[in-house]
Structure formats: structure tokens, C-alpha cells
Picture 1 (cartoon, rainbow, N blue to C red):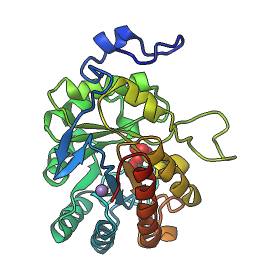
Picture 2 (tube, rainbow, N blue to C red):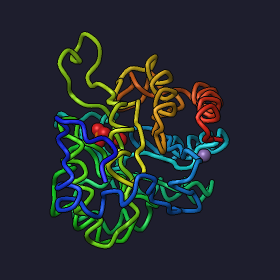
Picture 3 (cartoon, rainbow, N blue to C red):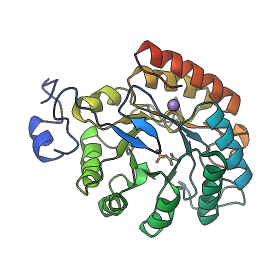
Picture 4 (cartoon, helix red, strand yellow):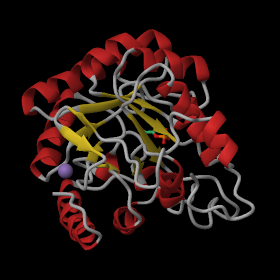
Length: 295
Ligand code: PEP
Ligand code: MN
């Protein structure tokens, strides 16, 4: 089943058969095909998920929904419930929670763009599932196994971000927890890993682009790339997004904000509406070169 049986691979033939048989490819060209809110996954189209890190207020999310949709984005992203690294909050740096979820619903109603948003706690799965087209499980919850099961049981499509310290083997193990519940609409997302020398001198994380073909070699599930969280640095988002498309990614997630420098969360990585519009055209050109399309 494995195309590359090179010695030293940490995923064995045995793993594919016994540890994640549902996530494993059944043949070399096996690729999951499904549709979410009219958007095809597993086709030659490369869906784009765009929006702010956090749903800061109603005006911002509606304005962003309109802008990213006009540029060709397929999904609006934005967190109302956020994994914030440090516990201190200010008026600006705070989760908008139920309000943010309502504003996402408002943005969806105003523009028709489908929505992806993160679920952090089991008690909010249901209200979030009522609004979101895709439930995002963030890096920090990637191996919270009972939580994966609870999210899977909603039957909602799920994006499973890769923990920054996890192997592809661990990541596929987590995907299997969702698939085993009969939930087949699982999207994987590579968002950067911790690697030697990435701290300070270059960036917080290293975008593991090699994980795209490596993961696709093992699984039929779509693999999305998030260059915003990986680079943490605006000037590198575009080159890594283009490289993501070139690497064969099945989708790109990008942080887009009307006033990036003043974004409440992660202001160093968001791109402006203008930059996003230009990136969409360039990503489409790269996609065309590898037999796919973004626009
Ligand atoms: C996010 O996409 O908003 C996010 C918090 O990402 P990650 O889980 O990859 O850090
Ligand atoms: Mn598209």
C-alpha cells in the first residue's frame, strides 16, 4: 500500500492496516471527495479559507466576509472562542465568544459565505455547530481524544490542525478518532511545527511543507496549509502560501484583516484585503501550473 517503503519511515505498512485503516489510502490514487456548503474537496480546485484571527466585532467580520468573498475565498475563518497563549486580557485582546459566534452568523447571512471557526470546549460544540459549516479543532486540542469524539459525533465537517509537536503518525491517529465515528468529512491542516533554530532567529514555527506530499502519500484526506500561523510574519505569508499551492496542498488558510497592524490577535501575520486579492491571483497562477485552480 505504501508507495515509498524506504527504511526509516515511522509509518509502517502495519500502521496503515491496524492503527488508522480508515485514514489510510486504499490505493495510490485514492483521494476523498466531498462537498461542504457547495465547495468541493478532493477535486482540482484548491479552496481558500480567509478572515481575521479573531472575530473582533460585527462590522469587522461583515466587512471582511464581503472582501474575501469578492476576492474568491471559499470560506470565512475567524475565532470567537480562542486558544490565547497567555491568560491576561485587555479590552482589545479578549475573546468575543457567544457574541462573536452571532457576528459570524450575521456575516454568513449578509454574504452567503460559509464559515469555519474553532471549537475549544465540549460545552460549546452544539451552539458552534449550529453556525459553522466546518468545526476547526486547533493544534492545542489535536490529541484531546474525548473532545475529538464529541466533535465527530455532531456529523459536522471537521478541520483538524496538526499540533506543532506532533508527527504525521500522531496526526493521522487523531483523524482516525473522527473517522471511526462515521464522520467522513475530515480536512487536515499543516500550520507549522517547532523545529531547531526556528525560535526568534527566524520564526516561531517552521512550515512543514514536506508534510503535504508525505501525508498525501499515506491518506486520502485533503491536506490544507496555513502559512499565517506557521510564519507568524506578514512578509513571509505570500511566498509560503504560493509554495503551499505548489506543494500540492488541497486548500490554503490565510489570516486577512481590514487593518492588519491593529489586529487584536497576531497583528504581525495578517494581510490586508488588497494583499489578499493579489495573493489569490498569484496562487491561482501557481495552481494552474500544477494542474489545479484557486479562482
Ligand atoms: C487559528 O487558526 O486561529 C489557530 C489558533 O490556529 P492553531 O490552532 O494552528 O494555532
Ligand atoms: Mn476557490
